[in-house]
Amino acid sequence: MQIKINGITITLYRKKDHKEFIWNHIYRLREEIVADVLEGTKSGRIPIKTIKHKAELILKYSKRLRILDI
Image (cartoon, rainbow, N blue to C red):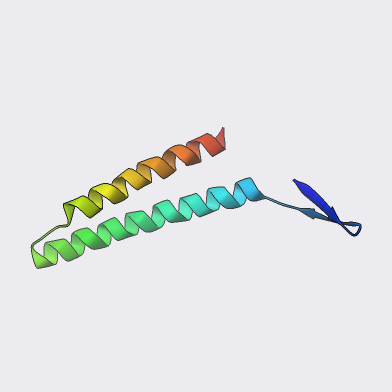
């Protein structure tokens, strides 16, 4: 998408930026899951509900990322 302001053309890469944002969010969720499991193993109690919720979010964002790649 290109926008012209006072004769200056600005090109926007919204789709690319959004794909990067989604990928970074997925990666951060994966890191959080690993951290939760490590802390849970150390304390003897693993937070299953939060891990399942984060895994569902990863699936949701992965679907969005696949749609953007089409």
